[in-house]
Length: 163
Image (cartoon, rainbow, N blue to C red):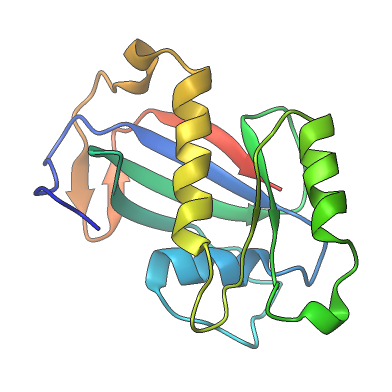
């Protein structure tokens, strides 16, 4: 929960790329975090981007996320989504933790369905990983952020991935 007013400029912007196979809930997880709603039937052909101001560990940031189907080398965390559907589970919690340990990345289990489980925590943990991997100096933008509706202009973005 936010404890201070959103600063008007000079916020670091994090470009978040949510990757995974079709039907695993990339868009549902992203929409739940950014819009606080669960969309049970989502058109996977729609390519959306989501923008949000958020405070994580008493530091404000701008998060810009795109559900995506490819993988490159970015700071990342492993997310097991749809844990509300335990009867359809493909891997165990232990297998997820083992994979995360093997790749030296954090692991979290989530559900975008109402009530959501660990949705905010997953995105916040990802920003923490980025902050650990990128020196603080490079997280600050040199340009001021100008807002038009819900879109920012003149921003420098840091990229990362939720698997």
